[in-house]
Length: 353
Image 1 (cartoon, one colour):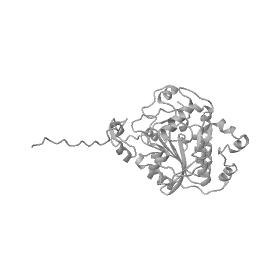
Image 2 (cartoon, one colour; image 1 turned 60 degrees about the horizontal axis):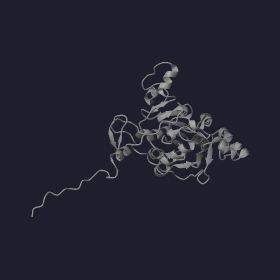
Image 3 (cartoon, one colour; image 1 turned 45 degrees about the vertical axis):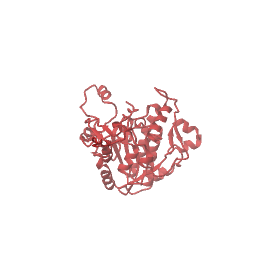
Image 4 (cartoon, one colour; image 1 turned 180 degrees about the vertical axis):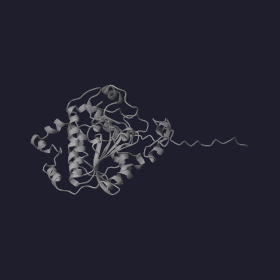
């Protein structure tokens, strides 16, 4: 008996449960549909037009640092809602939602690691956490990163991706501009290099403070870099500003950044810079000045903390989880931050406009 044609099974490139949106990402620059696995292989750079997608902290660690070398510091610091701030949602609700979404305690992770065998103190922002905004915890971690670089005489690197100061913390967030720049002045006097890496976006109070003070300022291609939004800047000066005046390439042309480096070349470039920027010989003065302050739960404010006890944590908006505070265990892409959804639109900056 003759049989009819046999239907061959159809093999899908992804599971039936996972739709196309889970396998592809639309490039916002050229509208091309890019296979997510291809994005992973290309360091999240569009193979068609070179657009640089934003990265999580874990992805940055994998991209820049020697495997297994990252030791996170001050993992237990968390922000608290000292002001009882409430806009569309209470601040503490926003914090919890960002922690659930990202797997992070705040918008920045810092620690000590190696790049091509060279030891560095490095801090990395994650824009997914409330637009990478800088509040009391981010400022405290940055200050500790710079102070550690000075004490251990190793170069400091900050990879920024931020909308600016965190408006929900009011003046406490604005004081972080001074808090992060003061230790950089000591680094400069001591001859310890600081490299600023500006990624998309670097704006507001972050750009107005430490991000503009690197001995070398490196930017990723087409990164948005500026203090205020384009419309606000134009209205402030009362004239039309050039197209693209807040892009990395424009700022390079006008001397505000030193290098624009494609992401796949960033690790090699940083390694080369570290070899070209040796740490100056230690004369002991800056380290001695740093050593005069006891290293307590609030860094530079430790003496104040000892006098007033727990009231300080409420005053400046920092809470310490003692179980993980100071934990030097290694962080990886799998444990430091959850991988971002390829199709989810990133948060708008919680920025100072």
